[in-house]
Length: 156
Ligand code: ZN
Image (cartoon, rainbow, N blue to C red; front, side, top):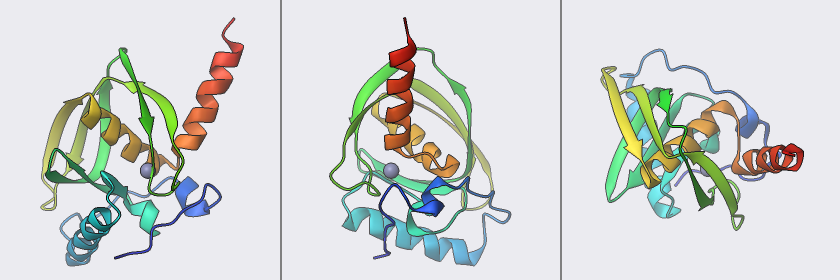
């Protein structure tokens, strides 16, 4: 199992991750299988590369018993309708925050062969994908929660 970075102070967790140039690189396959193992061992539903110290645009998720791998994902559409859910994060053990997110999103990404794929998700899957996308932008749920609170405070 890989070591998962924790704590809101870690600089890697706040860095914008870099695009992967060669999605089919052998080195990535090993990394991805280790990330999936680590996600299982930690009983998480998602793990982004920055969380194990690699600042690259890659995450793995397991929702409804299905493991999926996303390389170079980009959000191409998000609904105005939102959904509120209490989220946790493997990098912030024991902390939970109510986060408001789009109820439905569409994501473009690459698979392990470098082929382009698109997924449209709603509900819990949409939440998980947005949470992992945040990790690639260097945003943790605690940051998002603070932002939400500030916005609320100014909404007169
Ligand atoms: Zn997380």
